[in-house]
Amino acid sequence: YNDVKLYTPVGRDDFNSLFANSQSKTLVRYCPDCSSSHQVIFYKRISNMTTFDAYDALTCNFTSVDNELNSDFELYISMEDYLAGTNEWSYCRFYSGYGFPGSC
Image (cartoon, rainbow, N blue to C red; front, side, top):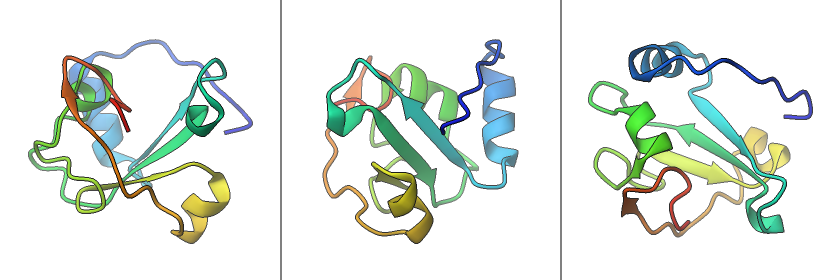
């Protein structure tokens, strides 16, 4: 995540396709103005992508539908934890109308 790259928005269909077909199924959220615990968050998808709308969940409706913490996805605060699969978050509150990370 140290090599931050900015991309042109691609829309729902292309975003979902790119995310579903990515090798790692991981999104890194970088927010330098957020509290230190939320400046970098790794969202790692661990369950089937068949019914999951990544665009909707990650941009505007971060709900638990097809998106349960540590069943469908894991959250990490550091690259080291993400790579090792350790210290994943244990709590997340979901809100319709808000994108990722909701109130995790």
